[in-house]
Image (tube, rainbow, N blue to C red):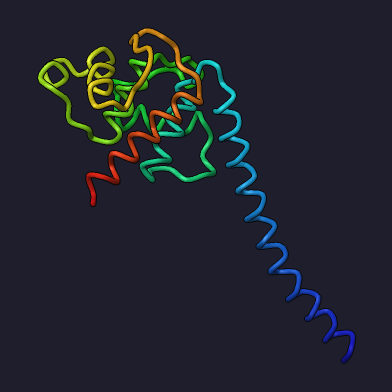
Length: 158
């Protein structure tokens, strides 16, 4: 009887430990993904898709960069690229404006694309500093841009 009781205690005490360790490893994968994006000198389409779609709650933490790129291409076919291709500031701006359903000015409405997306985000003071639509951006700059977009979204919702 004592042996059976101790096995039950052992099994039931092991279940919470197993659950907590799986949560720890899931968040560790997410942190690793964020760290790898931050260290990119030229953010890739997969990384850009991951950060933007995660920010809009379309995907979860456990999605790979390639799966995020596939989802972005499915949702917004005009932004589609290979998942490991570097993204320019114009392409990233167009991805952000598409994913967050941001309205643009007259030129963006007539010709929605990377060039006018950069100009629109520059006008809205979301992009700061050098703003050439053909320049590559780092993961750190992409996060700063997304931070300003989210601040703006919060302000609009209040």
